[in-house]
Length: 364
Image 1 (spheres, one colour):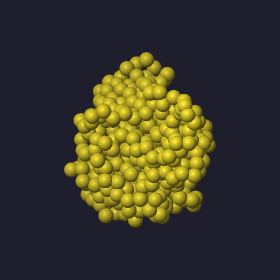
Image 2 (tube, one colour):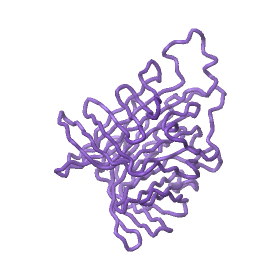
Image 3 (cartoon, one colour):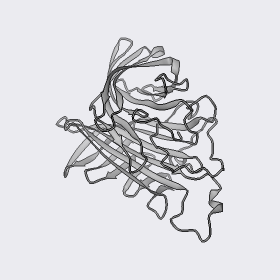
Image 4 (cartoon, one colour):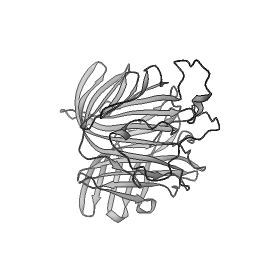
């Protein structure tokens, strides 16, 4: 899912953005790149890493593309055009959850997509998304991530263990009651990961598993939806689960909430709102934003006889992005325990929680 606020990035000039209204039918590697004309797009990586001594880390690296005017608006620009003029703004969020050290480190960037400072390039079969010196390179066999800040950095190589999964109907995922309230959405649900983190001047070799989402669309959230709870889980039987709850003002899920179960062979199964239930078992209050977030959950998937308990590895994994997208949200590493029928399951994952510090009001 996405976490980008308005921040006056989305100027309305009376022209129409492209709309997602039906099957997306992705074609790779082309669709790893950017989709100009759609209002909002993001490439999202998260993962759980560890070192030989047992120290555990979570990480997040997200790139956002926001188109500030609809297609055709550039024809109204004066000539000669400034080299700084662009329809695209790019932002980046990066974080490390130091589980053993009980701390959450984070950084953010936002720049115009001009003069080679930020953007998306495609050469042959490789797509590169970059914001200053942060980047994600997507090749047929590997993904390569780089992020640098004053407090931490990481460089990771990710090997897909499964092909990309298209959510919903050929990638078309509804986010509301009308067809155009939707996005195009696919994921790499199990990426074998290795590389290095640098924290406090110490470089740490790590390995583990990552998840990647790529999503784009133009429609705003449906009125009455204040945020969402999004879960990506990697289980010990080599299956994965993605579910999201679109929350209404009364806390109940919107009917467009849905998910995907991916079996060990990589085959997806669409989950409707009625196929699963999420119960909140605990909560955590942020000392900075005063937002109260769910902090432990029970996920039940009825047709698969799956019951899981999901627990944050670290309570405080709240993101503050006032210098970029303006959203305060919780994005954190979790552990999973439960069963599928009589088979015990364990797992790891990531959870994103928006709309708890303030109601969310931005394009999906």
